[in-house]
Length: 469
Image (cartoon, rainbow, N blue to C red):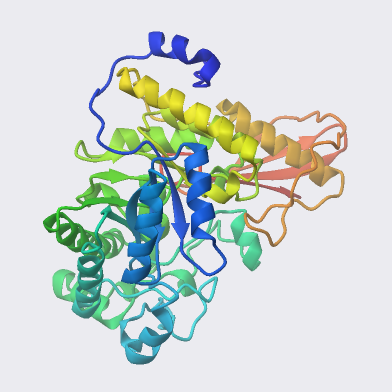
């Protein structure tokens, strides 16, 4: 049965769902928000209230700004968690840190520091997690933020290394093909302090390996350094009586591989994995797959939420499908990236109806129990994703490009345009490893031969691409 959680069917869902924890101490509907000059904070919090949101993960440029914003949020009934940029310092601090502490910043396998090397975007100036000075800097930052009156807790973000690979469609923004090997210029963690700690523990230099990106000890060690930093900040916040959440990558497997991040080892109270469908598969079912994968691996101490996208290239109307998918797979709450995606009063009003209805289901102890089986790794069983892929096959056959420099690397699809039907032959598996699966298939109607690539790391299908052969 396809589970939907719209108001019209809420009673039926409540009857079908198995009772879960009746006591839930956390807000249920969240968003992220950054206090920058372009944002009218009063208006932003008004929109949150209109949409029925309970909480915000807020990044402010100063302690004084946090205090001011907390007062506004509370007037609108919104709880505040401080959105803390950790290993990638916020823009307000970054320039001075680059001048005063250039030795704190991350280094790639080629020996290039991000002080000089641009890794994808200029704002990616990540710090080395192995350095005691960096750890102390982050501990003190959390300590100061936790002093802000009215802040419920902190949200750890950018607690990771730089992306060793990008989501496959987003890579087109940088003219990259990253579906074969890990490129050394994007393989980070080679700061001298990191290498020294590793060699002291394991007795060899990982750069001596044929492919350091495949060295299990070296990959695990870098992840451990990030984990240690996260738990230092968790300890500081907990000592201050604050809760801790985080915004990690979409699934545990994806985050371990892409950015050396394993939040299951962090002492989190709750977590908001970023299941941004329009970055990965362009299909709302991605929110279901990553949430289910996370639910099956998460520690019992951590309440699982799901971060969904409202403004990353897809139709904002899909937000309801994404939330349905996440709740059906075990999410206990939703966070939006961002409130700006609910860009009309009508959409905010509909969202509030949805949010209120789900809060009623939770109060009745009737949120669904997810299926205790892992998501399917067979892409052909995912009807929604395959429909998107076939639509893009038709666009390519019609001579259109499907990739461009955009927020998610995709050319917006004009759904009013119709294309000739496909007549696909047999799908031939031509290449497979632990990271990708590649098929060739011919459209017999046009004679065009296509290559379709699926990203398979992370125990889920986490991306695809279509190319003409």
